[in-house]
Image (tube, rainbow over all chains, first blue to last red; front, side):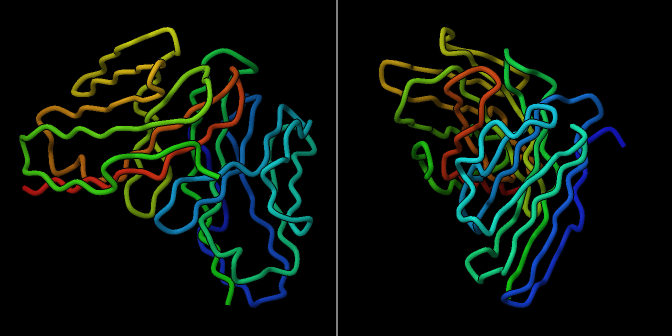
Length: 115
Length: 111
């Protein structure tokens, strides 16, 4: 497909479980972003990759959150020992640019529910 | 934390009417963008306006930017039922940088 894809689309986890969320960016896009969107709120930045380098992880809420993009393409966001407050939609976006105009192309998101 | 506020939080209009929503932000920006999000879906980019631009048009969309007031507005003319969605403004401080979103305006266009 031509767009950003994310899997799974829905994930239900028991409190304390580890989860892994996958993002397939648009082929050739240099930049990849992860955002967290709570119900009724705007997305909030989590972390940013340029190719395989994680250049900004200032938005990760705790050390239970970990993201990687080892080959500069697919990225995985991992949440360890999930808590109820982790319930949200996790959005991935990619952008072709290193700089310049920063239009980001978003995936459909993964809705995580922690019971 | 969110960069700024969007006003109104919710808007209900009849098909054919215009919809206007506003966004305020707190810090200096590189550019400002507007995105649309349909229920349960990802965000779709609508329009980008650079910090040195004051107005931009794209189809039925008109965006203004006032950097002295740190505010922007999005006007959707001749609205359609398909325009029903949440609209978010987003800013970045530097090219290629992370986006900081507002809280969104939920627009309902009644047929």
